[in-house]
Image 1 (cartoon, rainbow, N blue to C red):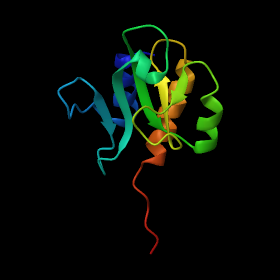
Image 2: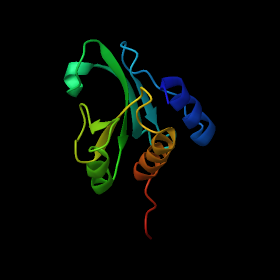
Image 3: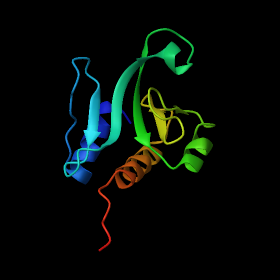
Length: 121
């Protein structure tokens, strides 16, 4: 999955468009109702991600259950969250190494984890 495929998926599934709060092209995916982030698409220098080689990598940060995130960080295409809480967020490489179905499922889970909470009366 690449950046545009992520944007197409969330637009179709949740009706959300990427938000560009900075001039660097990094995009935030937010709930329309509460403005909370459920995803962040960035271009990050490979060395900052602990990856070999020069240049940059496109990544997606999603909120994730800590146990699942710990498991996934041991698999190719998944890294400790870049620039976010490393226990509750996960970085996914958007270079084809992470399975598309996993990315979609993680986006769905992140959307649910950051959804507005229903209040008890």
